[in-house]
Image (tube, rainbow, N blue to C red; front, side, top):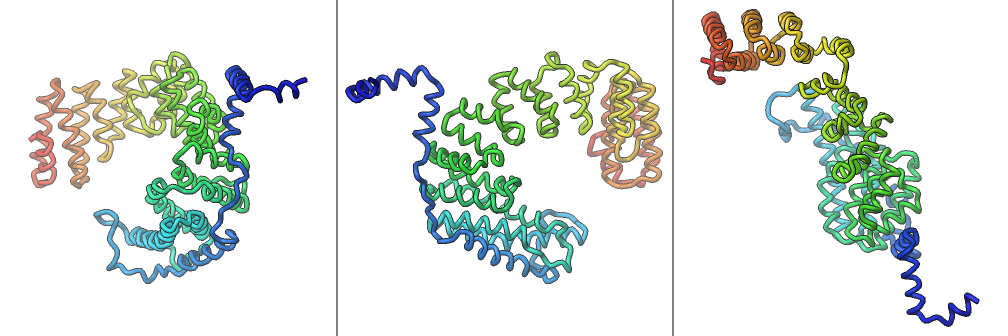
Length: 467
């Protein structure tokens, strides 16, 4: 019965029925989009017969060039330091060796550009694979150890060249069959290297993405990723391709599968939810945090976006993590709000070896005598500004006495314009506090009189305007 009616129905009627069904079923809509965008019967479009042979031969050539570098014959006369000032000889030798490695790799990256200029885009990528493999296989001259990690140094140099090369990739329009070929060969090479290691594919991720200018191209690359089962190795690229094809909804669906495997993707997803859905942001943040993922990269974002009242335990954990790496008063204020006093006193003990942090926290807790005593015993030429500033702010009359004692003690043995600059800075801070302005002026005059021969000290005091 169906066959009879279907054959008799007009194309217009069939199309009307299809539209009605599609409007009612979101899953069918997605299946139609995938069917429409999916490449049909793609064939490899290779400039060479055997890509494996091309990669191997090119790799051997590049490897020979790298291994031919004679680090002991590098000419100091041709070398310019990357920055001004003195550096030890071994560091200069290392810089010079790295520069020579980069120069040799740059010659071969220029070959990639040549292949692009003659529209042999497949060879450009095959040659990049060759450079990558050469960096892994090359054994640099072992008689000289200017380069502590040769493979990493070579790969870093190659990556730097590729970053400067990305605008070229973005400017070219690669034929669809070449794009399909590049992706297929690249993923096959990854499988041959080590299918469990994502570093190879991640190295070329930005290059692949720079080639995509349209939804059609994104569809081709996405199809190959799925066909070769590489989504887990390229989660950020995979989700960005979904965004180009299906928009934010498609991106979000893909990102929720893979955000725990890529810090880049996790931060992008959090950035999306930061402005669109605070509950989703908090759920993703909590899941990542509880699984110990990307804490260093995302902790500051959590601190800025999360509401401490909605999940105080999570917020406290984030703050404790941040303050461990960089103590600040804004972090400690949160600790005071979210942690009981008994627990804070226990926590304070963990800060005792970070003298400026410990003194600042004691002052914020109102334990001024403890802060002053600690400053008296642990202030030195390096931390004098950081240890004495909170003391001056919270107990200026007592702190100025300790400051005078410490400065006069240090000036007996310590020298150097940097040290004098720190002394001048803390004296300026003290002089700006009205309650101890006169005492500070007396101290400054006493210091200048006792150390009149130290013209550099007086120079620094003039710079900050205290004499």
